[in-house]
Length: 121
Image (cartoon, rainbow, N blue to C red):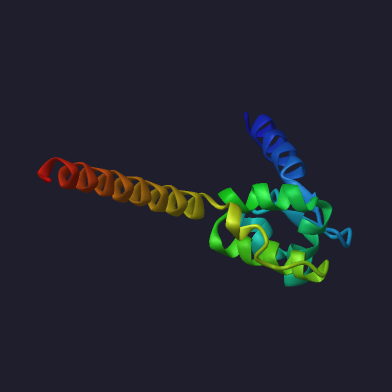
């Protein structure tokens, strides 16, 4: 039983290792807590160098603040606007939808007022 456990543990350790852009082996898969602790700031930024701008923007939508920081730095290192993906985020989409809903409600109220004025004459 101990042999089985040690073999499984060793296999897990080997599978869960990843290499950074510099070729250094670190524990954990990219963006796992162990990987974040063991990689340098430059390695985290270079990690996003493999992604296209479209992929970075797609990833931005589901990323947490810390990861978004590195996405922005990777875009900046390419000479792009670090917040170019920001307009695509779900928060901005939700805000746009709320603004559109308010505009629609306002237009509907204005139509009702015009009808009331026409009927009151």
